[in-house]
Length: 173
Length: 290
Image (cartoon, rainbow over all chains, first blue to last red; front, top):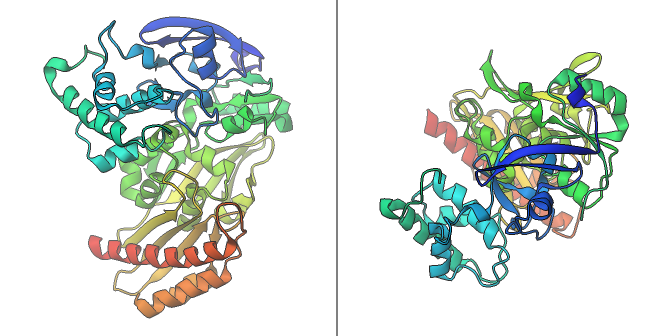
């Protein structure tokens, strides 16, 4: 057995978050969501249910939307993560965030980071979605305020914004 | 809502995994996509002493078609299988059924092998494996053994995988050009586990059914096939009377449990309705292809 394979209770993990290289040393049982919030101060990733149902903790890992409460922090080693803090360019909101603002796609805002990350992956893969496709895409994120209607509008507005080259965010998005 | 402490190992090969299992066996849990195990850990419903993380075992991530079979490595993500051209061509039932598994965020991490090894009685993939007659390759320190679906699924959340073994591969017979297929499920909300789900695979080259396989999820501790219903369809053309007979037979033979989501009587009724729907859709697909 290689040395790396022996079980340990604590371990270091090195990965990138929003383009920045970071390293944390954490108990093996610590979830990635908790490490992002507590060890890296990235409290934009919210925790609702902590068992993979609500979608509030959704982040991008290697470009794919995943539940960060269902990953261990040590599993992030070597991966590229993106959280809601990585969407805006300084004071300039990401087009998806702008669209949420314009369409009133949030009320309390607790679920919003998860929606934004889910929609970031979705619109990258499907830039001109139908309403049915949007409903399907956001089905894994729960919102108890909006009734979803304005979130769907926000995704439609975001798709339009992202299709206009002048409002497209810098490369890498 | 935090996991109890455990020790963590991340082997990079099947050999390392087996060495860890030999040492920690019953005290260890294998972690694949984590979409079922992580909630159990977070809620402390599972408190293993050791977690053996399979996600660095790159050798278990492959989809290969050869010799009339499609071999899927246990660590292939559900989303990758759903989008695999090989799976779409040779196992369209698998591609279709995967779209019913959780949500995209779940399928981005969840694995084919993890779902089958977890053997949730309401999950989609076990029923699909039963409908297609998949075989399971299980590795242990004494080598590999191959199990049929009927032998692999043993009960509620339980399979034939031993405490020192790991599921490495699932082999599906490639579907033939004259085979039709369908998967349908009823859930409270899309993305939830099925109350009842049904998978059908049929040959019907000349309009007469042959080798019908009908498997249900959510109606028993393991995926359920009803041999009597399958046999009753052999050589028949699908018409309203045949469909009504099969629906009745399915409802009569199943013995589901009642739970907070649905009564046994409701599940029996829905299973009959779904049997009609999947058979009808499967036969239409044969005609569509020929």
